[in-house]
Picture (cartoon, rainbow, N blue to C red):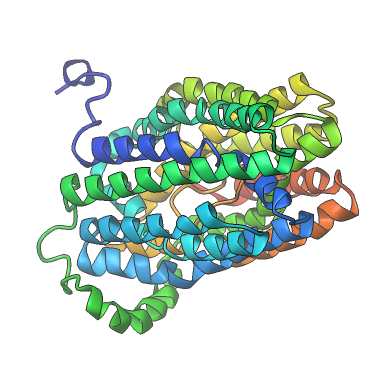
Length: 438
């Protein structure tokens, strides 16, 4: 059947639709407040070094259980594991609700990222559920729809903080803390709903005969050693292009994590942007990303992943270098719009090339090592990606606090030069796979 008869979005059905709706709900709650996460740390007595430490702790925690998550996804299926792990992850957000100092935020970041070990299963379920000839568009649209809410949410968060400052009679920091706690409470309740939806409506994609262990949570501790042993076997399995992608991801994650938490800090402390303006900038840059995500995803399917990755990787260092010269609201908005454009090129392209290389039977384990989205440029919290990505990212996040303290311009100079090196490595070494996996 031709795509004209199927419809433009014929691939948005079943698991893809459920996953997209869940991300929409998450985006509508967490994105209200995550852009102000670094400011929350500062308001509770932290400094730039504590911002780096907290982000580093989260990344290290994420690393611990990721191989176990990927192993479970391939050996026992995706859906049951995703649903109940989402519930555990949701309860970790209560640390953010009750935080009264930056140390409590550090605990929350550690446990929330530790319990995100179901993400390899989620990435595998997405790749399983999308037809190979529509993966570029599929990954793009799964970014676009939740992104439509994500672009509005920071504006809401900024004005919630402003409202508390104007009408509460509290100091600026007190008002920010109370506003953030209210928003985290909403996110917690939303997480409970998302967990229920995933448990109730997701359908398993691992076929009969492909799993050999029924998922019982009492049996999970017995899977830890086999899960870690599988890391070495998975690395040996990788072909040259995938190994190069992994090396570039590890290299780039150090520098992206180093700078990511400090975009908003730099904007406030150096440029003079207030929270409501930052929320509006997030809206504008997000709108650009949403508007371009689907057409750029379709272009991935048409021209190939490699060309789109190279285009994004060439623009990214230029825009990051320019951030230190932004100068005001318009400049900051322009730079972050270009970064959003780069991400809209790279995310569906990396997701597609990785899914095309990795067979269904290995996706959980491989995604636990390298993630499924390749390189993205974060200008908030860096979300890691896989077991091999977390250590350099954690080190980068920790060092970033000291680098920013040394000179606020250094994160942008160093990150842009590192991304230029990554572009050259992709240009020389990364090729499209000869055989596309289902």
